[in-house]
Image (cartoon, rainbow, N blue to C red; front, side, top):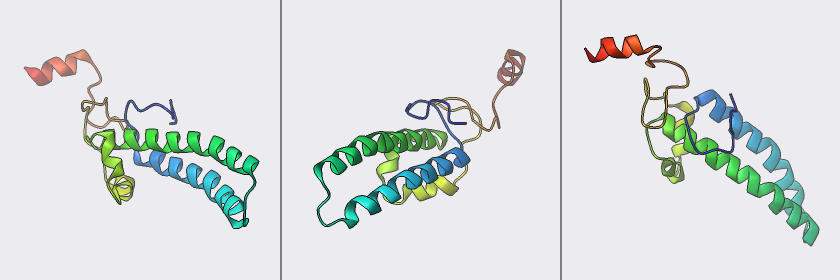
Length: 120
């Protein structure tokens, strides 16, 4: 779990996607409340906010793309409204797809002999 969290390649399970979203909320909500409850946040606070927001957004986009890959879709599907909620509850594709093997291991081939038996 959480191997290369900033990479857009591969597939992740629902659990990792859900934990990623909780991590994102744990960092973004308190900072947003602190920053935007002030009438006029200072320039240094806005710079710190941007420096923290960019990696957080990158992290969520990467994790969302990998979850889309697990469903057999392009990472661009995550910009569809409410698709993130669907990714949280929908099951993954069984077996390997064009984005890699199933992270659960369901339907993946364990050895070359099993692949040869399947093709024959």
